[in-house]
Length: 85
Image (cartoon, rainbow, N blue to C red; front, side):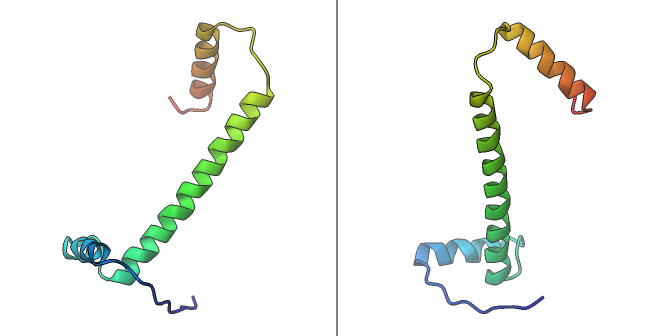
């Protein structure tokens, strides 16, 4: 994997925070911590985009004629069928 060097500017407070994270043993270097944050941001964006899609899909499906309890039961059955509960 190719590595690209970057120079970034951070505040003294941010520098202290990074040093604290490294001192705790969670990370071994500034670079490792920054790469972790980038990976986390990528996952967060994917999850957010998926949730946006589900919301848009739900809105587009229109108003349901089912009661809240019927919706709960159908959801519970679907989750059981999918092995999620």
